Amino acid sequence: MNFKTIEVKRENETQGRKFKLGVMREYFRIPNNVAVVTAINGNISENNLVQVLKKVAKMHPFIGVRVVIDSNQDAWFTEECDAPLPLKVTRRKSNRQWIDVLENEQKIPFDFEKGPLIRFILLKSDEISDLIVICQHSICDGLSLANIIQDIMFLLSSPEIKVKRIDPVLPVPANFPAVPLQVKLKLLKNKLIMGRVNREWDKQRVLFDDVDYQNIHKAYTQKYKHRIIVEELSRSQTSDLVEWCHQNHVTVNSALSAAFLAGRRSIRGESNDNNHTIQIAVNIRDRFKKPVKRVFGLLAGGIKFEFEYLLDKTFSDNVTLFHQKVQHELNGNKILEPLLGYYISPTLIDGINFATYGRWVSDKFGRYKKISTFIQNKTNKAVAISNQMVNNMPGLMISNLGSVKTQKEYSSLKLDQLHFVTSSSPFLDIVIGVVTVKGKLTLTLNYMEEDNSGALCVELEKIMRKSIEHLNNGINQD
Image 1 (cartoon, rainbow, N blue to C red):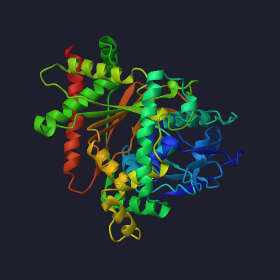
Image 2: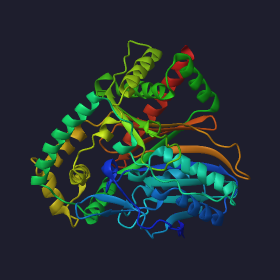
Image 3: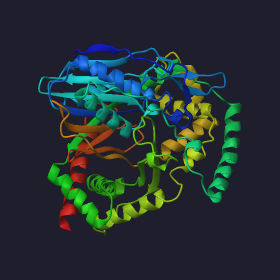
Image 4: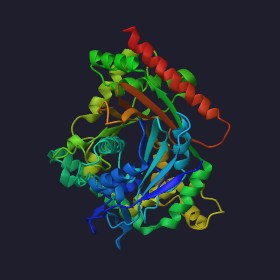
């Protein structure tokens, strides 16, 4: 596919500002990206889009950052980044072309040292175009990308508008409300435990650099290819789902989650449906001292719990039970505790990531000896934690951006569809991205394919269709 690449030079007005990665270091130097794809009716001028991207970068500083490591091995986002924003443009040929383009984009590593950690792709035609925004997860979440799409659409329709910088707000303890004494005591206990773990790591510490990252990324993307399965509910199906959820006092997310658990069990059978761990992404913007609605950054947490779909109960009963479990997990400060008590050594985080993703580096790579020696040391704390994490990966991971509010029209342009694509992993089972726009709910099922047999694709497509069938049947039976 022939792309024309346009370098969008940014106006950097705040040279020198730095932000410590902190909890965002969990996504540093690993193949973990998020993306949104929007279909836009109307003719988009490339020159206008370039000017709009300059404005968007001025509004949201994290769009233009790179990462530097200091002498203490702390990682910092810095706005001292001269690299332009990349905008790739090619001719749009079909409604599903964006899937192939995005799957191939996942193979291309972001350059943490040079930046930026975001890319834009325009599949252009005179009548309708697809705009893809793909971003390294350390600088943003899905809701941030949905907001970026709204900003781009608005500025395309109002080119005379001048924009102002929206300062980043980080998920650090200073930005969250005070917690009760019992939580403080729990966090203190965790700090003592992690202090011991960090000291054990320091005795066998291994430091990794960008060359190591290039090795693991290339080996990983040679072994696995990111695949995307897409489905869309009609406006009537979406409306019926929302109404049913309101009547039953549950969320759309709970109904979707239960439907996928039911669909997976229907296709695989009870004996092969034994991973009941659920992980749900949670927007934490409203949990700050001051709400941060439009800030661009990684402002999402998560909850993790066990839930088994019960065949002897109705779909409605299962959704209710699931919803009650979610509400229990969201109560109090549970969602914030991992952020408030983030005591893990930054280099230990790197070690865990490289132990997890470095296992596919073969002797054909320059850093094979270093990485393989590290991974084979089972007494190393990072390797032990990595193995434990891999064994406890969830069977269902779902990220729902909710209903994204948009204008009916943006001058001569009209936003028609929006898809949210999350990252995946060979260790994850069902990974779902959800977003609703203009009354239509869209789903992406994301997975890593090891071979070209297509067997996994066939199975997951069946699960997707069966899950939607369970969803529609369930809400129509009541």
